[in-house]
Image 1 (cartoon, rainbow, N blue to C red):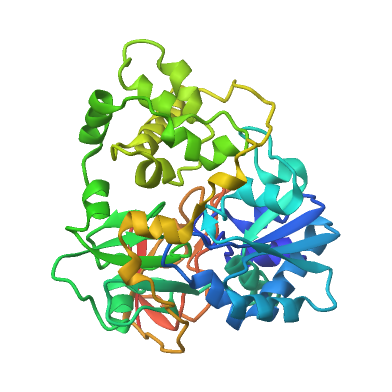
Image 2: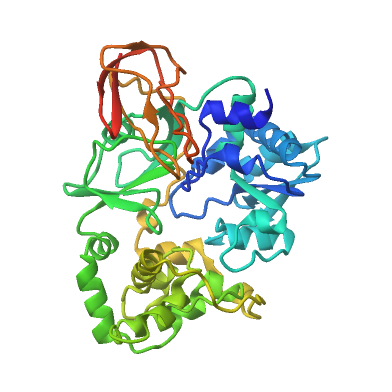
Length: 437
C-alpha cells in the first residue's frame, strides 16, 4: 500500500484549519514540500508545541511526503522566535534533505501565497494553488499525522491551544469530539463572567458562545474573551449593520489596501475598492467584486488597518460569496510583482496584539501531558473540505479505537472519520455520530 492510500485510510486532513484532505495533495507531483509552522494567529502555540515535542515525526512526515510527490527539496517554515521548536526541528533535519527556513514574527506569515514566496520566491498565479508552481504545503501537525498514517495509525486526536481569559493557558492533545467546555476546564476554567470563544484564532477564527462545540480535526485553538471585549463586540455585530456602517462612513483612505498582504505581494486585492462598491449596489457589482476575489480573509484590513473601525474584510467575504453564487471566476490581471514596500509594511505580532488589546493574555501556553478522557464525544461527519462521511455504524454498535466510523462517498472529496477510543455508538444522525465509553 502506498503512502497516498495509507493517508486516505487514516483520515489525514489539513490540521492548520483548512481541512483539505491530505491524500489528494500527495497524489500530485511537485519539486518542493513546505511544512507550514508559521502559526501567525496571536496567542496560539499549537504548531510550536507540535514541532518542539514531535519534531522527528514532523520531519519524517515531510520526507515521506517528498517521496510521494517526487520532490527533491523540503523546507520547514518556522518563526525564529520559537527557539525550542527551532532547535528540535534543526536536530531532526540533520542528515535529511530538509532545511529550516526561519521566518519573522509578523502576521500573516502562514498564508500559503506569502509562505511559498518567502521560502521559494515563486509567485502562485492569481486564483491558483501552490501545486501550480510545483509546491505542496502542509501544516506541521498534518505531517506528524502522515508519519503516523504510514505506521497504520488513524487520526483520532487533536492538539490545540486554550488561551485568553482562562486560569492556565495551555496546549494539550485530546480525543476528537471532546467538547470545548472540557478543554477549557482543563485550563482551569474561565476568568470572566461573560465568556465567548474565538475558535481557530481572533483574526480568522469562528466566534461563538457555544461551549459544547466538539473539537474536530481542524480545531487549532480556542481563545476565551469576555463578550464585552471590543474585538468580540465588533465580530458579533450583524453583517447587515457592518455593511451599513461601511456604506455610510468609508472615506476611501486606502489603509485597508496598503496593509493587505496579498496586495503587497502584487495581487489585485484592493479592499477599499470593495468598500466603495457598498455605495454602488445597483451598478458595477461584478466589477467591484473582482477586487475581493483573491482576498485571503486574514482580517488585517478590518482589525488593524482601518482607522474608522469599518469592516472591509467582511465586505470582501460578501463579495466572494456573491461571485460564487453567480459562478464568476477571476478575470483580472495575471501579472504579479511584489510591492517595493512589502517588507516595510509587515505587521509585527506584538503591534497586532496591542491593536487588538490582548497583550494581557500573551502567555506561552506550553504543551502539557494532562489528559482528558471524556465519557462522551460528538463527531461531526464533515470535518474536512468537501462532503460529509457516509456512516458505517448504527446506534448500539460497539466500536474499537481507530475503527472507521464512516466512508467517503463515491467520487467525492472527503476524509474518513475514526473512533477515538473503544466505545458504544449512542446516536447516528445525518450530521454527527455520538459515542459513549
